[in-house]
Picture 1: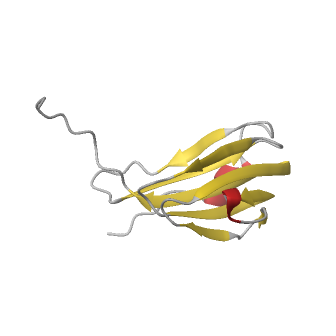
Picture 2: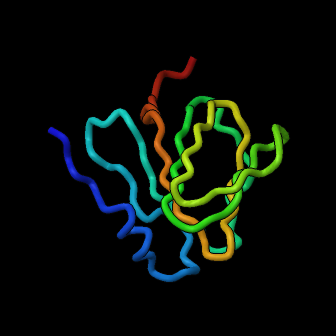
Length: 120
């Protein structure tokens, strides 16, 4: 059955303070095939450039503004509420919050749990 999870707008608006940075919500339902996180960056804070080697990621800006950096692949792109980006696996990316901060939702395939095997 479809399950209501949360009100993204209400969560983003209810961040404890404008200077709050971190995960406001994450998908935790058992048996899921996806991971999702609602992340808030305080004004001027950033996610350093990094690459995700294995997973494609969708990023939906929920509130605020900032810039999306695509590594060496081009100029920074503006992020505003409603912006939706597809980040193909292997691409380098960074996110910087603007003057009012930034909240965004990420969605990607769930990573498999750690497997403990025999030493070879």
